Image (cartoon, rainbow, N blue to C red; front, side, top):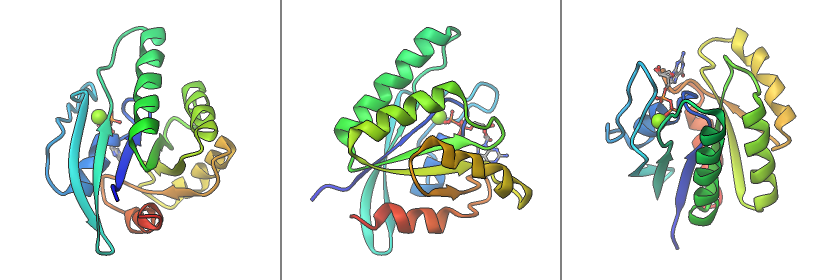
Length: 163
Ligand code: GDP
Ligand code: MG
């Protein structure tokens, strides 16, 4: 049985930072200035004794909202086709954006298991700010800081539950 986790979300929410933490090696290229990463990166991870593959989606950031949305939609549909579990990463600093809502709707209709990670929750105040992400309509949210690793254990417990 294949166990594939795909990480999706807007650029700059912290997908590659989380990917690097999950696979504990730095295969994805993170450009601090632009948040640009290679198109897709694959890695292996293990949690609670379960091995699984991780896909970091992301693509290239382009300077047009339309192309940008089309690229994210492409990545989301690829993830739905390929993955057993989809990790939808959102950013507490920006709050819910229109693009987040659009992605959430596609994911809701996919029938796939989706786990929502609210990233950049670096301190307790931000846990309060994160509550708005229940508004995505995707159920439970997991507050994490990909930078410090905070909250990623509970997140992974949920991710591997069905593996
Ligand atoms: P991606 O475009 O979604 O892959 O995002 P990246 O992983 O490239 O990160 C985008 C930016 O967000 C980088 O400057 C990261 O250092 C920053 N970042 C990622 N995770 C966190 C976090 O947990 N807290 C904070 N404060 N910044 C983060
Ligand atoms: Mg990236």
